[in-house]
Length: 267
Image 1: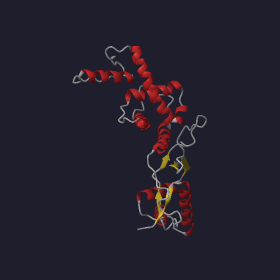
Image 2: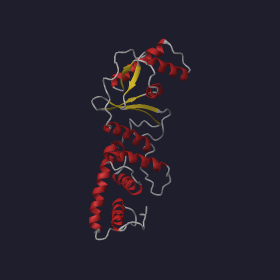
Image 3: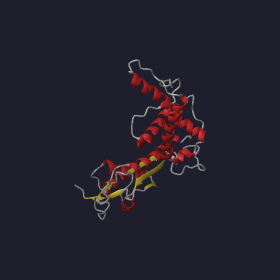
Image 4: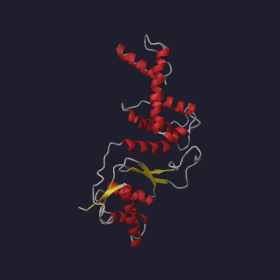
């Protein structure tokens, strides 16, 4: 990418633009007047190391799947070609995820990285969700609602520190020695959440649990039984005692994990 020249810039602004272009490693970037190449190299290295550290920390599994040279190339491409819109360091991983989504539209880009895994975007998203939950400033009221109410008669209250996810690849099991080469025959449903001790967990889920959590999230006054009734109708099933019992057990399981905060009475 070539740096863009703006003839309307004053001398100070032009100096800042040249400095930023060099820091990002843009091709053909002109050195600011009076700055030696060696000194600029020091700034470039410091800036790169900071960004790379944030990304390696935010995407630890993804990092292990790349050689040093391939990872450095990907990070350098991010710094050079992507314009971040946030001034906050903690949001850099989110910007990196958006950068990877952007690359999905450039499948035949000339500098394509042969080490990019087929599940790159899904794994990056999964790791970003874990990071997002770990640094979230949301503080649930863990005593909100009544934990002793009948889960079917009460209205389940969902913690804000919960994400219900669906992927084509088993992102929760991917490692250097366990790399899927193609999407799974069936989608993987996961629930990622932060508990009252601040620990991040994941739970293998199902279409049933995914839909249940969606209803609890979107229907603010739906009881457990009403949610089960909706799911049964959508699935063409009879809402019998067995299904209700399974639903009650699932709701209490979600409550024990901290995915639900409790139950409230219907209004």
